[in-house]
Amino acid sequence: MASRRFVIAGGHGQVALRLGRLLAQGGDSVVGLVRNAAHADDLRAAGVEPVVLDLEQARAHEVAEVLAGADAAVFAAGAGPGSGTARKDTVDRGAAVLLADAAEQAGVRRYLLVSSVGVEAVRDGATPDGVDEAFVAYLRAKLAAEEDLRRRDLDWTILRPGRLTDDAGSGHVRLEPSVPRGDVPRDDVAAVLAALLDDRATARAVLELVSGELPVEEAVRRVVL
Image 1 (cartoon, helix red, strand yellow):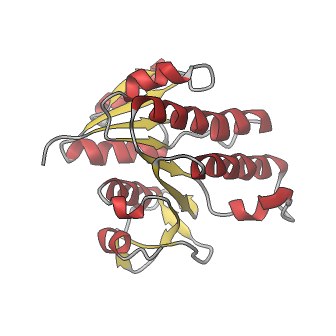
Image 2 (cartoon, helix red, strand yellow):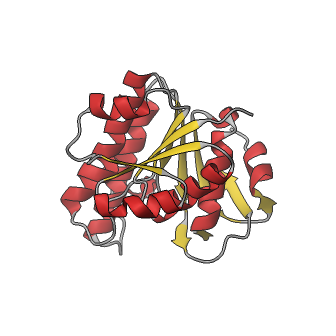
């Protein structure tokens, strides 16, 4: 199979680095968008080409230039747990929207959005009990990014992982439109994203992910929409 080219936004993130390494090991060309030039060497060590571009400041045409010729775009960026509510909006929503705008401009149809379980709890302005303000802002930003993407004529897939852990991946997951609450190792999230890039039958699907019994490839194949 000919080498493909993928662009990952938030390329230094823990899931993104794992995904980039997987894809590069498979012979694909991978570009990672990062805000901090100091992270470039970490990407190179994973086999990923770093491109320094701040998605909070960039314009769509600048991002589209990087995306030109790509087979898919993956949004795996995040403001991070230490950020305030304002950056939850500018990164978790705004940067995801910018990447989708750029994908449309560049003619890149395949777009994977890493979202989060729990976003339904804030639909229609609801505020879930016992959830701190910053996490509510994060969920609202993720839901807004999802809703923006659903309106676009792209081959998008939205992945909502459960609580992320640094445990070694088992390679076995549960991937369905709705799953019970649960954890999932970052290793397995990256493996599922890589499998989704190979499976366009999941285009326009919203899928939730936790650890489970099925091997990753089989779980992706068995998705019933």
